[in-house]
Length: 428
Ligand code: AMP
Ligand code: GLY
Image (cartoon, rainbow, N blue to C red; front, side, top):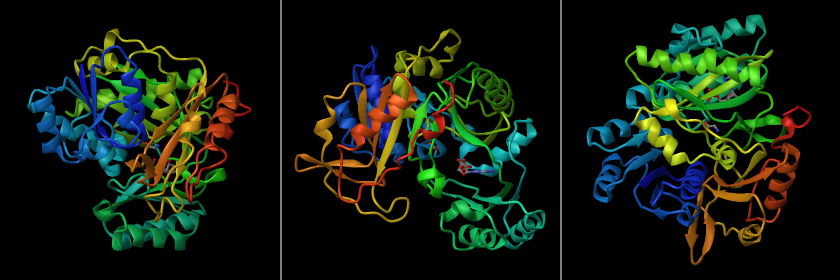
């Protein structure tokens, strides 16, 4: 098979890495890719949102299967465009991707179908939003203000005072710091508990769960500071017990796929539920219409089954016959970011130490914001590398990943030092 992967992050490197090790892939192209994906296949200089350019390339190269990494091309309707041209593509249609593109659609969808989520209201008028925020102060509880549209995981502001809530509403709706995503906001109650990422692959009927994982969204240790795209992840996530996994499938994943079909938006591809586990019960914080980044990096290091076969089956409605096999070991990814991320940061720093990792067993450095320059590798984004290791248990995976992290450096490199700590002390 000739495979085209769209995107340029750590998730796409992990997809390319996994597919390159499977039986199906004869040639792998990544558009536009990064310095790491170039080691697994051929980078193609077409941007992820250039739908016409990508379609032209897929037709010319007779691509057998296209896999979409990020949400933007999905919400632009790449799946619809490719399918209309007779090209096979893994991912949801534009109408199905609304589940991520609009938080209002997603929340209203969950409410319509009894999928557990935090109570919320939607506002298009800032003064009405503020009046609603005041009712939270009266009840003395924190609230969460979310830009309705896409904001790279950064459009969610958790407010512990009324002043903060007003500021959040002004930033999103009036100053439009997340652009058009701030035309409307969702205000919802703050949920306490432990988060988990639950990703499934579906052909629109059968829903197959991937191994549960846990992300680390905040920039600083102990989940402090602003949210990022994700600073590290591990799998399995012991907070998701076997029983809980069953409950998540029964009350969230299968009902969501069924309801999307019922609403005339049949869903296929990867469906990602960001969950809050509160008093042992799962609630949905958000749905994403794609694989998680960085969750995909540790998840795919544990997957034994050939991924291309599974994805092809999903695009052809044949998932009923598919089972997945997992490495029992634990896997953990530490994201190394540019100093300053998620705010302003510099690019173009030379990365040193990558060679020292090559001899390390069960350690893979997935590239995200990297590029080649003069024979070396430089930083070219906020999240730069995802250093990922397999260990017999989470403790060993942590030790191995951080041992590798210590060997890599560039000016201003930053990483959290507590990835996976929440899993220690829990039984796997
Ligand atoms: P979202 O993009 O909606 O998943 O939100 C990003 C992050 O904000 C989540 O991963 C949580 O850490 C946090 N968050 C979002 N909604 C809530 C909520 N209702 N209660 C507590 N934390 C939340
Ligand atoms: N790691 C969070 C996400 O992919 O949305």
